[in-house]
Structure formats: C-alpha cells, structure tokens
Image 1 (tube, rainbow, N blue to C red):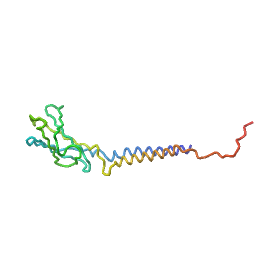
Image 2 (cartoon, rainbow, N blue to C red):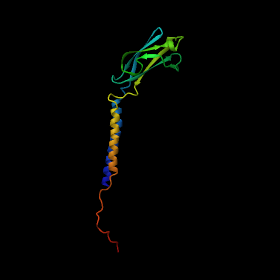
Image 3 (cartoon, rainbow, N blue to C red):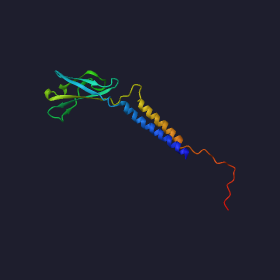
Image 4 (cartoon, rainbow, N blue to C red):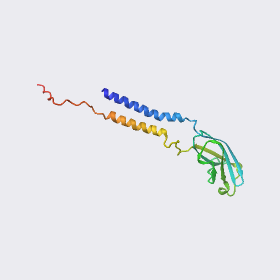
Length: 176
C-alpha cells in the first residue's frame, strides 16, 4: 500500500510539472507583445499610391503586414491590393515610416475617388517564425518533460513486486 501511495505521489508531481509548463510560456509572452500599427498616411503620386505606417512591437519579432482598401460610403467594402511592394507581407520588423507602394492603375484603370477610400494596415506575428537557433525552446522543454515523465511513470507504475517467495519449504498442512 505504501508503494502505491509513493507512486501516486510521483504521478501527481509529474502532472503538476506538466501543467506548469503549459502556464509559464503564456505568462512570459503576456499581451504586451501584440503589434500595433499607427500613423497610417497615404500619398498618391501619379499611378502609384504610397502608404506609410509605423509598426510598434518588440524589435526582435518578425511580423506579417497586410493592407486593405476600405470605403467610407460602404462599410462592407474591402479590397486587398494585389500589385503592392515594399514593407508588406511577411518578414517585416517593427519600426517607423515603413512604406508600401501600390500601382493602383493596374487594378483600377479608371481611377478611384480617393476622398471616399482609406487604407487599413494590420500586423500580426509572423506565423512560421522560429526563434533563432531553430526549434522553439518551449517546444523542446515541453517535449523533454513529456518524455521524461512518461518514462518515469512507466518505470514506477510497471514495477513488479520484487519479493519472491522462499522456495524449498513445503506447503502448510491442511486444517484438521
């Protein structure tokens, strides 16, 4: 019975450690790491429209930046420009005065009434990003804990009673 209680205690410690591994990275990340796009400015220059913005976030983080065109008259209107270049897409870092160039004439040959339209610039953490060094440290720690916990649990829970009956004694006599 004592052996069972010791095994159960070890399993509880392992489960507590695994739960802690799930909580600690979320606390470390916090909500302050979300990027913010500020100070969006538009400057039409002939056929090209320049969109400037500031990206606020941790400097070591890589972001994906998306640009969409919206209408003031129709709140459901949303258009994603296709012929854009510059500081847009994946692999954008935080910084000031990033510039996106859009050749609007290729997508709207008849032009647009610019006073009716505005741009939304969104940024999010680049999904395929891995920290420097390759595999995520959190993933390595969690995977290692699962492997070690599994091995320890198998050893403790599958441990057989090591006491063997003494051999050579005859069976006890039956009761009269």
